[in-house]
Image (cartoon, rainbow, N blue to C red):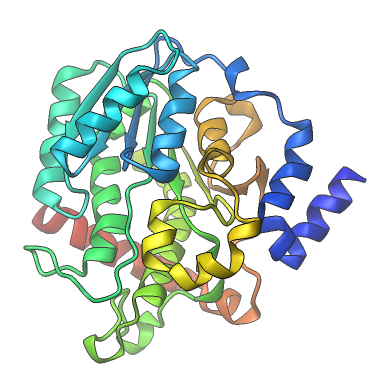
Length: 323
């Protein structure tokens, strides 16, 4: 019966993505506080609010040594202090880097490598839904840089430390990606929407689709042997990002939105649950693997050629001349 209810809620979307879905499914959850990550290093990006802050607090309770990464020094330090006041035996370290700035990401990875002998988990949570297009110093679309290129570079540079500890990478995606396919690279399209057709919500969804597809590709990438990859979506959660980026949606759905801790639950569970439970390359919500397609149009666009083109474009953008 529980499995039937889960599938029914997932199919109907609204109950599955709302706090109703979490309330029903979580009745069978083992408390996160029963997981132990003592002696393990967990890197979390975007920890200053919302899902990232909630996940950091949850992971603090597992005894993990946390490396929290934010782009604003003042907010990052303040949030780090909030996390540090939560019960937990591990250390809390704050590092400052803008995930949209590839030079800053490379410096971050080098610093982590120089100061840590192991990295067990990387949580890619940093993100933003921009109403108007912004570009990085390297002329990349900011949405793609923060959600796709920066995380790719950080993962690439931390692979040796992750592989040494049989580590895992957790990517926080969004159910919004269900509505968009991979771009038609065969027609010269790219991940970046043309300036005259820019729509912040759609560009965000494309970035999230790319994250989920790359998660599957990473899972079979020879260079990442020994590292497992997991993507998830949090359902509909009431976070500062939702309030500022899609206020109309929040106003309509607020009575059924999850809180940040409920949205972050699967992030923390993926970081700490027994590895044999997970496999690699899965897309998760509420501690269950989910399909990455709901529409025939997105499934048709997900070809081997499109995946290779996606990997090549992202790798070139993230790694530059070293790709």
